[in-house]
Image 1 (cartoon, one colour):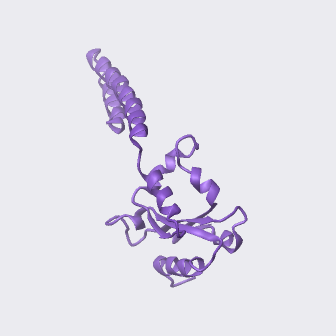
Image 2: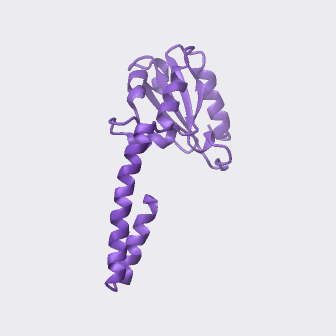
Image 3: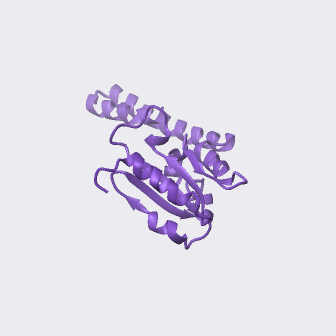
Length: 165
């Protein structure tokens, strides 16, 4: 599609999937979903959620290129995706400030996106506890290396502790 912008391709995708009953939800993620984040070169990251594993015509929408990154996923898989214990927890941030662009009448997709994009009080406590332990260990190594005159090692350990703050 030479000469077609990423926005035009995204709008065309929405026009195709909105009337499709096999697509029960669509979620815009990434920089395009977050105010102030997109650049002129930003692509559109889209999750298409289908009623079942077959996906119908929506299965043909899956693609990854410089304009659209479309992941097609059945609803049952989407329910667990990026949730604790799924093995895909690393992808949770994708749903923070994500925009639901198609939902079921009962609002299930928006509810699932909200759960994925925020930590419950219990999850926050678990994450904070683990991060604090890692930070204290890293800071201890940094201070110990500093005390022992190992400037390079101390700097590396200090730098390593920053993401844990």
